[in-house]
Image 1 (tube, rainbow, N blue to C red):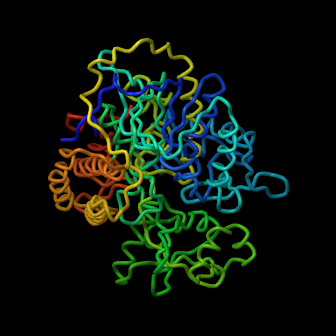
Image 2 (image 1 turned 180 degrees about the horizontal axis):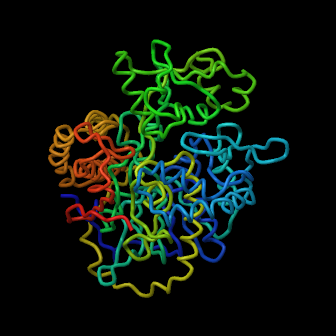
Image 3 (image 1 turned 90 degrees about the vertical axis):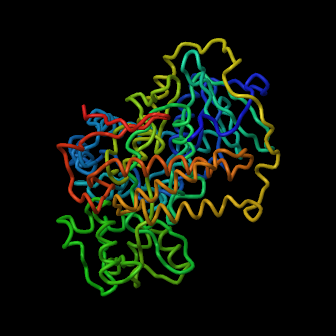
Length: 546
């Protein structure tokens, strides 16, 4: 059984720090929300590592917003709904496409330097977009430029306090009122602190570390979703995990993301025989939705008995390639691959979590005063399959809406802390100093990642999913022990999220978007055009589309 809290504690005995807004995580969601909230309130931001270490930092392609005269919010809306495979919340998508352009202007005001062409914002096109509406920076380093600019603003703002190298263990709720009142935080020296907040915003990113092969950094361990689920919040559509079609697959190299924008600028996909193959799978060829491209690549790998396919952009001008994709070009060159002359070996890797903590249009979860923004949230924008580059837009649009809602909240008032949490257990004060060799939980984590790839990966079936559920059920005994180290707490979060993803995938007996069942290969709108809701100590509930 998944517990309510990972560790036992006595809230009344803990040192308490008070703030108006607690932001958990950085990335574009955390940084932007903190900046907007600090205009009227005190903000405390907590990161596991540093402000610059997040999924946003590694985002290459760009941010989607209607800028061009021949584009319109209606086109962007339609593209998003098509990619989302019938599970987008249309009201949320309307918010995104109409408020996104103003959000981009705000990023520019805060110092983000997007690429220009002839004095105008440069736009590119990515898969499943009908128009060129992707803004980018430094060619293919958009995410890094955004967090660079926002981090400068955060570091210089007197109303924002940042705690680097801290770990949020659990959310704390008031049992009488059912509100989120803050979080239990583990400091850099291993001690515990209760952070009391008028509002708590989860901006903790995704769950890429569930899988052996991922484009996500090490910090993406599903902490926010797991904490919210343990606290009793509703999570939605956890079965939908997006696998990016093209991550670098080369001996000695990391699973480095090769942006969809490379295909947007004309690259071909070829199998190991040198044949272009996307015409056998979709009319949009290399610009088909990501789930279709990823499965097509796997099919080609199987039919040719290979572990990769090739991405070929050698027919384009070398100067354009180097200028447009400097980060990808330099990374490939580091491993002896020249994009201008070589076909680049690529394969799918876990990339983005479409599901997450269910929120309303103000970003508030089912628990009062608990908000979620960015990849950790399920606003309804992405549906069953995220449209490329919509995620950065979603973070700024809903970050601003979250702040508007927070500013309308009444004061939290006095807390009856007695009975708000279980009894105390002393934590190990060397929690951040333990080495991987000393911590056998790393073996459990690797086994989990391999199991998720094999049985809950890009292609699924009921037999494998049930085997995975059986293994996860046995592994839940991990929660029976006292958890003392950061690595153990992260693994507990991954284990929680693995259970949510697998149970959701087993429940949904159809194929839709990023969720593909070999035993139910067809999309079934009559039975399954609905959301999957999961809440602690309750069975999966189906939510009909509004």
